[in-house]
Image (cartoon, rainbow, N blue to C red; front, side, top):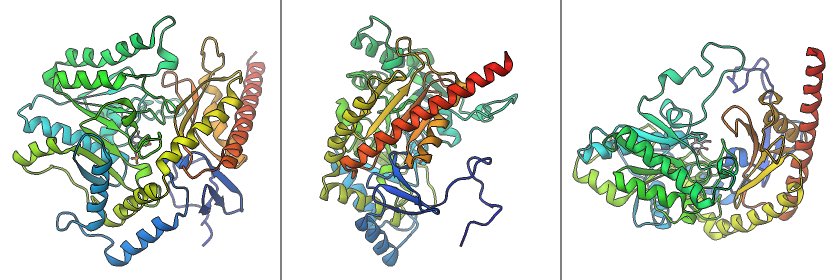
Length: 467
Ligand SMILES: Cc1ncc(COP(=O)(O)O)c(C=O)c1O
């Protein structure tokens, strides 16, 4: 059926019309006009296997035919049990219990609630604060927005540009992110910088009062808001020490950076720590089914088992059999096709190409990330790292130029300080071949250059009109 006009869908943006995706296969999505788009960001770091993987489709079909859904208040199911078992086996640090949800926000809500419940079960009722970091993103529910560093701002002039702020959790506190490119001071060593930004957690805990802090939540590698910004070496080890010293639970949000995206199944494997709680989504289902997960260390859940005996949380679709069948199939395919190692290998090749194309670009200040999770930060001046003016809307321009060229990437504004600064996030499917990487870099280069030229021209026009 053709798209009815006018639409009855409530689209994210009410003023633009989107192409209609009608077909997807491998690393391309095709629209209704037959145009092919190279999916260089897997949507939003979702499609790790590319589109149309026959084994995942078959696993979903089989699950639908045998037992699509049974509510977890009444039954468990084989798909969820298998997926939990595989994840526990693969995660470092011993045994884990896994709670399956329908996406990343739900996973983070569950993580924060479990952290709070655990503290109460330990007799620490006063621990009601969650500490997180500025310029982070943990989801769009009220709880997740409360701990996210970037929240929606209404365009145009409004007395309350952030309409949701008054509803945020009063027990959320934010510290500085680990964002070396922009905030390591001239002359400051990496070690000193790491100590300073990790130390901010201890300062916040002491300021709030350790007896009031339940948990700390952070993305291992910051995705949407900073453009694949990895922690400095040793950062999370210091964070772990601080959390342990003050009885604060450590939650790592690997919704975007996990599931092989950074070249190891869990991104934190590269940081020499084990968190108490892990959240996952996106690549876990690879886009074949909506699924998220919250993993908690077995010895922690054993405390709950002995105390109240239940996690006081639930949704209708928790442990959804068909979603879990997709997740289990994604993990099987990772093993059969050695895709996590492929993410590491192709990620290095992507980095080399990005460096060849952009190292001397006058407006690319930083190329960063891990494996198939890469970010480019745009700056007006590479020396001073001065961002482009926010009203240039550079990220939005790059996104639409890239679409014109048949490229899906994930540009975002507000990188530097929530308001100004721009980056492009890349999160290609792990199955990309070298020719796809060439196509990606070529199209991205053209999109960035054309967006810059258009923005500069429009700014000059505005200046002429006002002058
Ligand atoms: C790090 C991180 N956490 C949580 C979320 C929220 O996930 P979802 O959109 O599936 O609710 C996202 C989404 O982009 C994310 O990048």
